[in-house]
Amino acid sequence: MNCVEHYLPELELATGQVREALQAILHTILFIRSPGPVAPRDIHCEGFDLTYSRIANDDGNQVAVVSGPAVVQENDIDKKVDDSIEVFLRSLSQIGPELLSGCLTLSFFERRASRQLFGLVSHEERVVWEQWILRVVVNNTPRPVNDDSASVIERQRIQDTAEGMLKSAMLKIFELAGGSIDHIPPVMYEFEISCTKRADDRENVYSRVANMPSLIQLGN
Image (cartoon, rainbow, N blue to C red; front, top):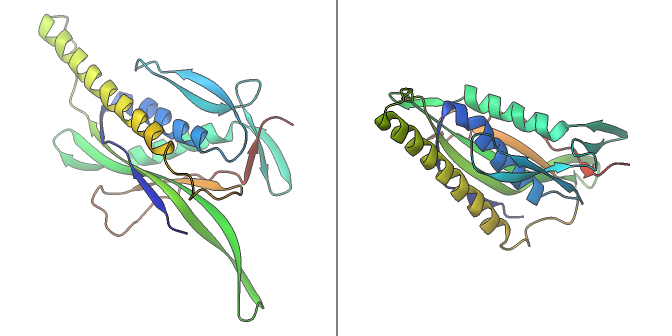
């Protein structure tokens, strides 16, 4: 199976904007690519004029996670996304004065059992069939805090630029997700969020930070 790679437009964000922007992008992709029927939970961003959907059950907060023989009610996906963002922020590399960068990759994969040596030895392989790749530049330049017109205009420019980039990335997600789905397997699958330690990392060194449970469904 060939892996389909989707590259999203680069984001340049202030430090305080990164978490909310990445939450919007990751949760949107996870909602669109959910392997089972799910209900939406609309989230209104505090720092951006934007609303997006997360996976939720009927009470609007949690999903039922079935992993192996156990069934657990927990807000597992939210936690894994948030944890992955914290790992990403710790892995950023400096690319200039007040500038940091990193790449975040959301991978979807299925597990397949295979046999070798005349079927006497079996093992499980992980087959990645889709990846969403996003490069983020974090700008730590202090924002102007004065109330003079120049400061107000600059703050608004920074806000408008970041919001425009985020909305562009969200539109790209819907565009790409609306394309061919022939590569999506007709089985339950998992996800992983990883980050490169450097934006130009050619050795594919990733920090594994999150896995989707084998089955997600609403309620009991």
